[in-house]
Length: 240
Image (tube, rainbow, N blue to C red):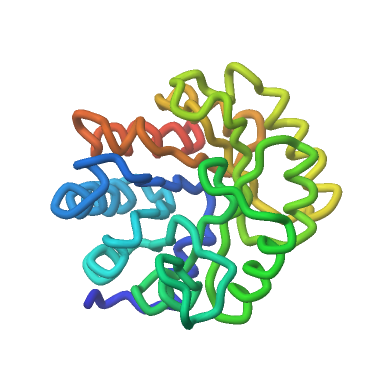
């Protein structure tokens, strides 16, 4: 086990700006030895840049990474079920037991009904888990903000995995989302996602008002993940 406590991980996560890395399920990059190498690269980059980094690995890697790395680790999803006879489903208690301190919910690749999202957010709060909720439009972002997640990420699904960054292709989605969300919850940090591939994309999102970014393939499948993480994390830092 690492020396960092559960409470300390929570404090690290809450510092802005935030780089959230979604490992998704890219083979072989997201699993086993390569997943741990990616997590270690992120940990090194976080120490060097001072940027908060959240790791979001597959379920199979949660325990290994959470016990090896001094960064906040989130699960990629949980199901709206209680522990019991639910073959193939993942209750919230399972990821908590595996070492996650938070959970990503409602990603475009794993949508939830509004009632289920609301239930899971309430349950996560009761269990002490942080939440990062994804949304696809300013309107749905406002609805999600009313449910009081800890973080929100705006990701137009048509740009995910395209290499076309939301911060450049659809900057109005970020600014309109910020406007709508902060009418409901002025303190809710909003991250930008979808198509983010470079430090320039990250810097553009920060200039638009985002408190960080949610990134997947650009980091996970990079030839040098450490260099890509440093590039993006450095782009979040204010110019001297």
